[in-house]
Image (cartoon, rainbow, N blue to C red; front, side, top):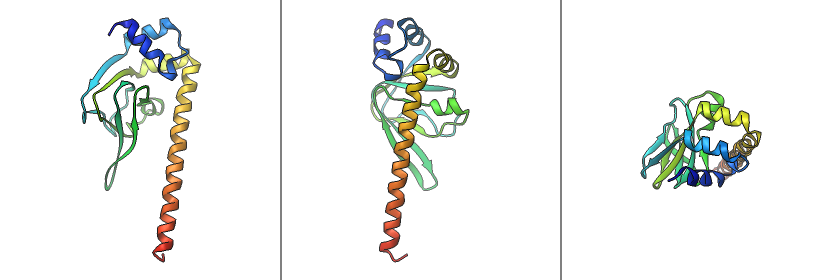
Length: 158
């Protein structure tokens, strides 16, 4: 894929839509394109987070390891991104991400990520929107689970 094709591809991703052409070329040039096969792990829960990923093509599951086994909490598709929490909060990876199909990603290092968000406030806003949407979904799921538990307790007489 040529640099211009990669820039066109980046332009389709909401968080990069308002970034100027020259900066997208820099991003395309400095980020690393990685391809993962189905069932291949992209990153593992608990490992250090030194980069984030943008999905160029394919899909991946987000899996959280719980005491009673792994739980798939989300599926990510083209134009999604992940790994930003480990970078922003300086914490280990909060989940494992595993390809569910052939997965093409752009790996953006921590340094490049910070440079981009400092130069492009619009990109920061898009990341905040996505994180807020994820938090809202998690809160709704938690409330739904809580309601189900309450109903189970009532029906079992407890």
